[in-house]
Image (cartoon, rainbow, N blue to C red; front, side, top):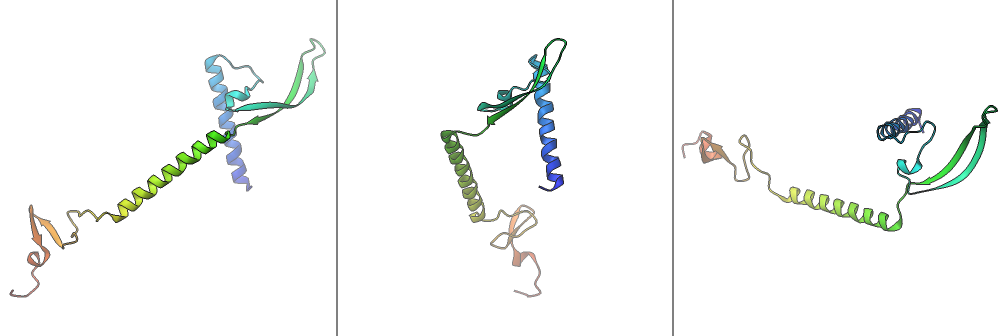
Length: 137
């Protein structure tokens, strides 16, 4: 990825982290250094690896790095439902567009409609009667 896209992705995750921490602080569930994978929207999670990084010799407290695989995806039924909703939305949008394209244009006060008439002082006047074309007819 180009650097600017990497930066955008990183900025997105930083902002997401800030929002998750702010929400946890506001509802009283924030614990520094602890992230609840379920809070981030994971459907399921699995412990992959746990490794000790540091052990405090004074009190025996251990700092660990934990690698967790989190699944944020959809099950088959949810994916199928989402696909059907998207297809229905697209079909509706296409039908609306086709309907708009098939509809005759609506005349505006400063345009002529299909019969070449314009509104003039509240009366419908034929274009030929409105303009003097130089003939005596």
